[in-house]
Length: 148
Image 1 (cartoon, rainbow, N blue to C red):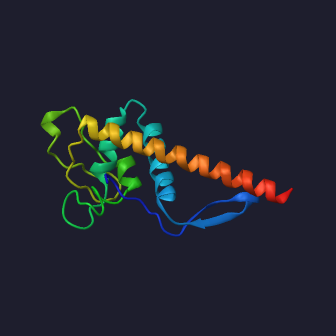
Image 2: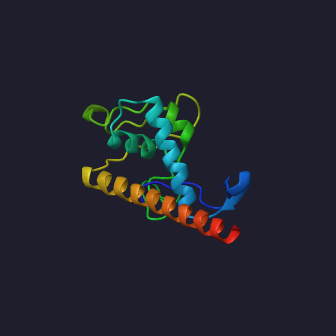
């Protein structure tokens, strides 16, 4: 696990203009995907590796100090991810410096994310998104068949 996001009792849009309450990794994945989209929007020149670095460097550390199996690098802190002064990943002089939040949020030491871990994370996130879309389409299709 690299980062943690809320995944219990998440309200989201549902069918027929209604809302639903969901729990699970699909909801957490959607939150992280949205965070990535916002970071990409604000910082369009960041590489995928730098986006992940920004997310992990600004996550709120929970559990054991540093990366742990329960929370990864911590809980997603979107405000810090969008506002913290995070030194570039390729700047070795700043690699050990902690980011400084410019508008709230708790900064944690920046992790080192290897290329293979980044690739694995991106493939996993992509697969989860595809699985979520397929399941959603199957549920919608099933409900339409039941309604006709």
